[in-house]
Length: 307
Image (cartoon, rainbow, N blue to C red; front, side):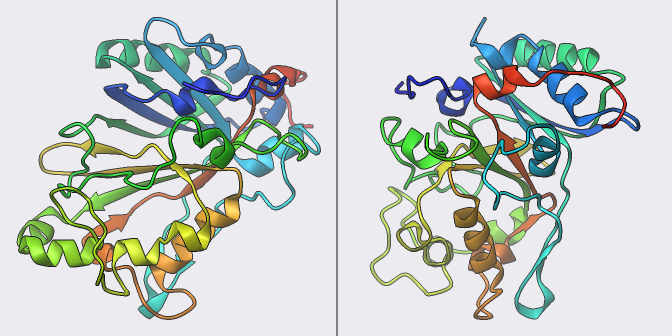
């Protein structure tokens, strides 16, 4: 794995591929607690600083909460997911912004479970869990549509350049995370013949080869990274046999890339929706700033009351 060796070293779990179990815990700060107290409590957890026992923990914060505690601590244009993205025909992607996120991943669910429980206990009185989702790999690298996910992901050598804020910019070594839960309309999707599924995706199902004649509303066409810019995706399937879908986990040095992709999927500017949105429905939507390790450690918890 290649990670920048600078004073602003990234949280290593962003790039820790190959983990088999994942949990995403989104938190709301308790009434009367200062932003710096929440950040300090999360920084005090063991796992954001290292990888131990096969478990990674990536910590992130609502951008404007982080900004309130760390002035000039991230780019000025990084914002909360404040309002739904409304596109063609009133189609909307919801905004469910929380104050903090812990993404815990590991080789087995028991260790992930234990670290998650321990983290929640450590944050008691400071923040409460508002959303919890557990994920796992499906047939190595496929999502629950049966297609390979992350085909256009950069390599681990390239990923830091895509995902991490450059040294010359506030928030250097950090990243912007877009986290969304998408429920699959499995019955509708699975009723489609393979050829129609491929047209929706814009890729061949067997090997993920991009279709030469892909439709303009295909998922690939509406998310053209050559047009919007590259992102580093760590998507995972989630859920049960009867209720499942995809956790979209996207990292970028530039929030605008991800916002533009969402607007394209919703058909905000041209009235053309991504065909995949007829078979998968977003039920959450939040942006989090993932600070570098040095930035995370630099916040003094201070008074637990609001500043």
